Image 1 (cartoon, rainbow over the protein chains, first blue to last red):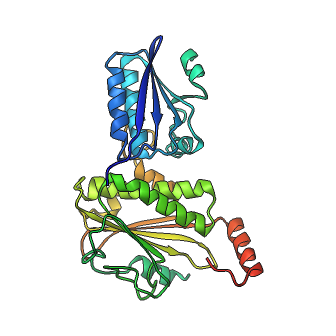
Image 2 (cartoon, each protein chain N blue to C red):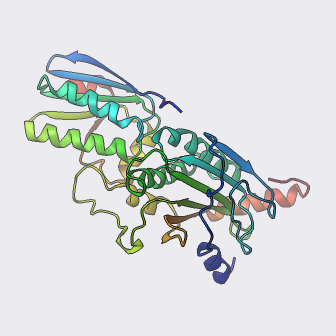
Length: 114
Length: 204
C-alpha cells in the first residue's frame, strides 16, 4: 500500500517562512513535514509559521517533529508559531501537556504580527 | 465481567495468531461470538472469538486505514466523536510503537488487532494487539517525564491517558501482547441501555 501524502506548501513572510500543511501527520507522513521544516530552516528564518488548519489528525510522531522544530528555533534564537490548530490536533498537544510550550495562534495574520 | 474472567481473557495464551494467516494486504473479519474469527485465529475459550479482527503488516502506511477501522467500531459502540478520535489515536500509537521498536521498522512483520465488545453491564471496547517482534520487559514500558521536552516517547503517555486499562505482556509464542480497554462513560452507557429497552428487537 503506497503511503498517502501530506503536502507542505512553503510561502515567504517578511521575516520568515509560512508552511501550510495539509493531510494527516502520522508515522508515515511526519518525515515529509520534518523535511519541509528542515528546508525552511535552511534560509535561517526569524519566524517559522506552521499553518495546521488542514491537518485533521496528528500522532506523537507529528508532535515530535514539532518539538524538534521548536528546539531548533530556540537554539537559533528564532520563533516557531503554530497557527489554526483543529480541535483534535490541539487535544493531542493538551494530552501531551505541550500547549504552553508552543506559541499557538488562531490565524495566520496573528502569526505574522505576533 | 468478573475479575477472574477478565484476568483469564487478558492472560490468554496462544500461538502466533497469524502463523498460518494469509498475506493479503488487509483483511477484515466480522464474526459472531463463538464463530471462527478468521485465518490463524486463536479464540480464547473464555472470551470467545473477537467481534472484529484485523491483520496488518508492520508498515506505517497501514495506520490510516487502521484508524478508520477503530473509529468505526468506536462509533458503533456509542462513543462520542472525541473519544472515537482518541481511541484511534491510542491504537495508532500502540501499533507505531510495534513498528518502530518491536520490528525495528522491518516492513515484513505482522500485527494482529482483535476487538471485543465489553459486556452490556459495563459497555465499551477491548482491543488486543499482538505481534511477533522483539520482546521487552513490560515493566520497562513507561511514559517519559513530560517536563523533559524532547521529541519522541509520548506514545505510551497518550495510550495511558486515553485508555481505562492498558497491559503489556510477553506472548508465549514470541512478541508482545497489549490489551487496551475503554468503557463508555456512565451516562452514555445508561442512555444506550434505555434505548435497547425501548427497541427490544434491535441489535448492534
